[in-house]
Length: 218
Image (cartoon, rainbow, N blue to C red; front, side, top):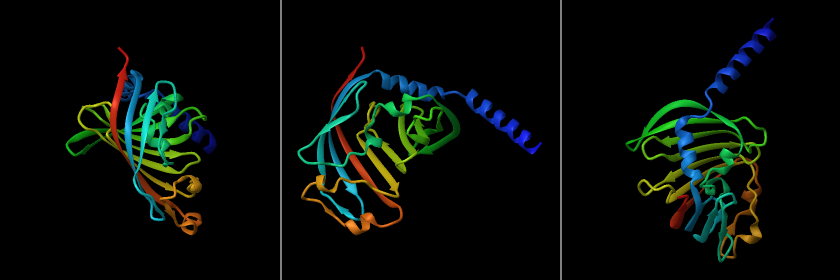
């Protein structure tokens, strides 16, 4: 009997959650992103990890619709993939549902808080929380719990009502950090003992972006 009751409430919860579908505000943000054809930017990257000393790095970023973001640099730089998908193609790639968590007020902006729950096992994240600017139609913050790569928190800064952020801060907390040490550049210093030690590794990556070209569908 207990199992039957549990099954009933589980089905009721699933039915009620699925009925919520996708939040209209997120759909509107998605529509804006779908209009992007191509974009190019110069990026300054600052790494903040206790056991890694690395000077600022610079790169050119290129995005073309339907293709992964690419970058070029004179020397190797660590690129936070979770923070560079400005089209949010990974989020919109598979079916998902949203759960409305209300609003927050941050620096005079009203942010709508949504939980994103993937409905397809192929999605690489387990759950995501998005905070959307209700007036400027921006994604201002994202907390992503992945299935295999730990958790990330992304903070986005914008210079006015532009489509793309001029700054992205990626805060991460990982049990293991996989870094190709031999490709970080001779000007970087790494405490390998601390890198290989047990426990969570915390740090952040800041990307300052200067968009040179943004092409939208006509």
